[in-house]
Length: 522
Image (spheres, helix red, strand yellow):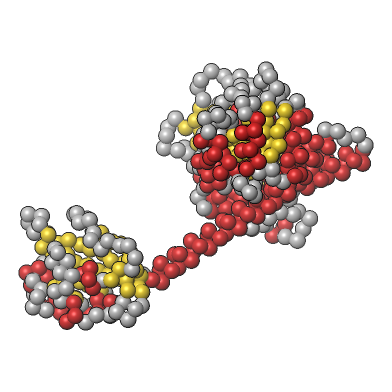
């Protein structure tokens, strides 16, 4: 112990007794000179690092701590503490993962007098962290693959139902097609819910704001549920307070998803009576920004209701009210959980209360911005369902790169239905060969499936972008994966737009119109 500067250890202690105390600590404490030459080595250091005090005194800390692999033990010294995690090889050959923390003790002039190093065995913590990360990664990969496989199968079901529904003639065939289409949409909704929950858990959800018309959005959702309303004989009411701005700035997609969940739930659990959507100004302030409008939307129904004691539980994943268990009302219990998290991500709140007329009232509040510019002309900003499909002056040629035969046939039908010329390719390699063979005749648009054998869409897109002959051709990524990092991967490869399978004829032409500049690129 004589090698320790007692003037140094008295800074926080009382003479030599302080040295005795830290010498016996089970925590690893090492003190070195500024050049990392060891001058103090306590009991905890001996137990953790497996070396006696006599072995290490005067030695360089780097020579004693045998770091496995690349690692720099020399910390960047400043006025702050530094800490890092290293794998250290013990004298017996064992490898430990330790966290090394360093504090520099300086004199009145700021010069370093001593370095105090504390170390802890964090092997179990690191192992637990790695296992948790691997589990989360495996879960995300499983959900992504599940989504991909289910979406791939759904492409043909949803797409060909859509085609057949435009050509239905016989009543029996019409009813069969409607049933298949309804089941396919239900299955797609389940896939989307699982995917949304995974996105939220892995923090891949971002708030994307844009100008939108709330009244128009709600009317679209009413049109979506109208067939089921008619089937059940339910009335639908929409009440928008005069204080609510016509156009606002917010995350239209998420608001639409929350409303769709609440409205479809209301229909599902209501046998008679009405569904009512109320839009108003909320009394409380929802945001620090005083310019935000406190929007409140309520969906009322005269259905079976929810017991008050279970009002909080119904917003938890996979949880359903007791009066729904084992009943005719099917569901996964994901819709309300996803809605709650989406509302909270947007800075709002969601809650349940009983309807005085019997049934349920689900309300949520959000801070949105009022859009003060000139009134939006319908059809100029968003491509809405039911609008005329806009085509360029000349009929375009679309190269469709898709390895699945059913999908290739379906998308080809969709494109040819309005007169587009279609060139088909089964994989990225065939796509590149056709481009080179047909040059200087090149397609106006390329629809590129991203998961294909031989050469996938990512590699094919990169090759196309490297060629000056085709570099300006718009490329739309077609993929059954739909996580945020999947979208980023497509963009990084060079794609201009993204379309998640399965998609409708309407959504396909929406993207094509954007490729031709007939709609603003987002």
